[in-house]
Length: 454
Ligand SMILES: Cc1cc2nc3c(=O)[nH]c(=O)nc-3n(C[C@H](O)[C@H](O)[C@H](O)COP(=O)(O)OP(=O)(O)OC[C@H]3O[C@@H](n4cnc5c(N)ncnc54)[C@H](O)[C@@H]3O)c2cc1C
Image 1 (spheres, helix red, strand yellow):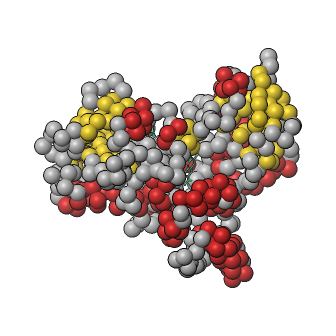
Image 2 (cartoon, helix red, strand yellow):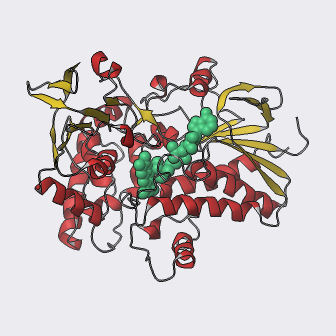
Image 3 (cartoon, helix red, strand yellow):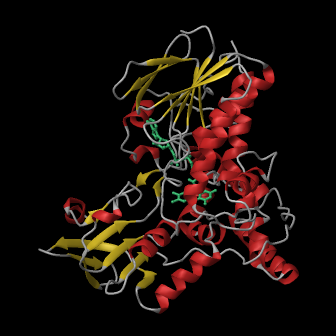
């Protein structure tokens, strides 16, 4: 074990990059020696969300809310101004590729500062993790195992789940299981319509990429709900409502709906009510019983997501134009069965309709349930009991500050996580405003902890 404390951050998407930057900044503030190993075969800061180079793939959150640091809210907007003076403002939804570039710069700045912390970038996949007397050892895809005092699992967005995919479709080369994989959409057959399964944010990206004259892009989901657009101009901030501590899910739902209606009357926009819930969302979620959480996930989540996770107005207009032209069609529907023919896939929906399409794309969004993730690191952590699935099925079971809570119920002193793997505890845990706050708190907890501060 090295003398200098060493923390391994697995995953260099937004969550891992921000964690590494926060650790280095905190080490500088404490004048503490620290080695940060940032492990990911991919490009720093990109991850799934910011790897796209398509100019029409915009951030779903306005630039003014995407700062890497919650205590410097205009940090990203100032970076944009330096990079392209006079082009972007805080209310703009800028290309996601720019944000990936920004995150890499944020980490470069933290790593080249005067502090004693050092960053080592390891371009490898972690395929296993073992507990040792001194901390952990990480097994890498094709390199020597590396020891560390502690590890942060910033594993992010897993490929979409496929439990609903009929076997004949699964085997077909006309089925695309993960639309974000680099170059995946370019490999789709040129001829025939395309069926997208899922009608959320991923579908919007994919549909606008694939839509063209002579091809119908059909999108279906159980409910057929589309993401709502953001407002054209910045909205006021409303205080969250207060809830009766004994309220059950029906009472909470009623209070939420009347809060949103009241905000629409007062401010002229329902979005003010939804956005005002941000500070109390985790508390409300934790207040629900496990049965009520399951009920919410089954019955309310789709409606919540379509209002909470919105698309930029320009994207909404582009989508509506394509829908009006008949090139994109969105509605309810569930696949019951599929059969491959020579040059198409014949899909039968539960309501009896059949569709003949050239390809089917899984746009159902990241797999949230770690028990169904096909990944050796995750499978190993669950098998050895170092991690346990959250009872809701969303990510790992964690403490409120992001330490893993393994099957024996004792909070880990060597393993932390953040981002979507904490959805079970926090529910909303996937966007930058949540992730940057978690990275900040996690660095404080980690460097304050006995193990890492040794
Ligand atoms: C298409 C899309 C658009 C989005 N747009 C926005 C937006 O505009 N604004 C917003 O706030 N949020 C947005 N989000 C939410 C987004 O998930 C977060 O903003 C953020 O990017 C999540 O980062 P992450 O690092 O947790 O996950 P990811 O981006 O998924 O990164 C995880 C990283 O971990 C690596 N990794 C995984 N397993 C291993 C392993 N075993 N070993 C080594 N490395 C590993 C992967 O290679 C990857 O680089 C979007 C999400 C998606 C999918």
